[in-house]
Length: 143
Image 1 (cartoon, rainbow, N blue to C red):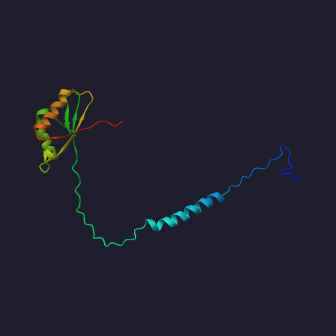
Image 2 (cartoon, rainbow, N blue to C red):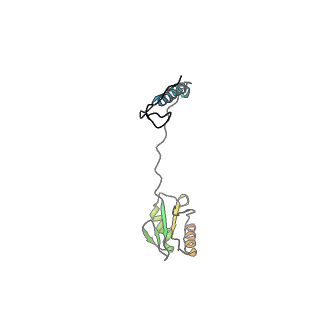
Image 3 (tube, one colour):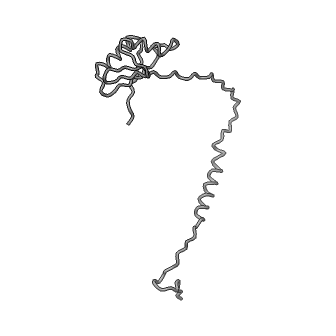
């Protein structure tokens, strides 16, 4: 026995398109996920009871403000935004740090222009070491 699927012409098995959203697969997936989470949630909880002591941590101090030395190509030398020269670098750096900060434990950040001569840069490095500043970091530009 034969049956005709479509009464309109144009093909033997032509059907009209269904524009409705089928939410049944979505609901099925959500129900499966709900069951998985309902089963897994009790396993994630800690079941061993322990009477923990209170944690009392001392208040931390803020780290000191970093000190930057900038070297310009013409020989310009700056501590933060204040101009200095090479012979006065150690004294000016101690004034900038203050009495409470130890030069041997202080990290000094050096920013040098890419056109600075190597001799000028080494003069700054040597002056820092002569004045007890041994921890030096070089600052570059991120690209």
